[in-house]
Length: 311
Image (cartoon, rainbow, N blue to C red; front, top):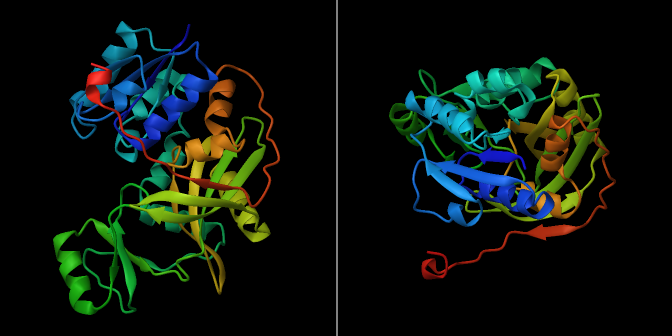
């Protein structure tokens, strides 16, 4: 029996990962960690442990203790905050730590570095500037953290007064071109295997509370070529998520998430099983990519559990 440690088990990504593994690899023992226990994470794993916040110096040491005490075989970090400090474990565990590696993480967790990297591949990008020391000249535009999670905490700035307010209050942020139309946002799951094969799943999506609430499988050749260029250009091995919008100037990438995304369970249900591919390759197996039928739709559902049923 192999033991898998999943970080951030209080979050939707970690719980989706645990759901996939419980269904597909029931022989695995699942251990979840999180900085608190006021969530449903314990329903998805065999054991749950509290650890310090990833922003503290004690975080990595606590993970290392669990790896040793519970003979952890595989570690799956799930958030940018954790990935930013995970380098020692990535180096130490090698392929047993399911990640895309230090270079891709460094590019993806910093939205300004992301834009600069994409531009270096001769791919058109939205204009992007640091909030500290400058304000945009074109409105409306986007304001968001330079480092952060997906589509959360993103604001539309309408004028110079609002831009100055945001820049003074949150200097570690960026202003970015507002890409239109907002109903043409595509999230792309991109997996590149050890032998260089690339699989891309394009999902036209609608956001609900910062997460993908509805998604439809689509196919756009220009988007495919862009995703393949990014994967090859960063020498990707593993799974990332590329966010873009279809504009009147063509597809424009505005973000790369260097991790499994909140759609990991959605896409698993339709055959894009990037989590299992990563596990298989970590175990020395080869992977094959299926053909995914277009126009399939997926939705996010909610549920609730009564604590007395489990405690």
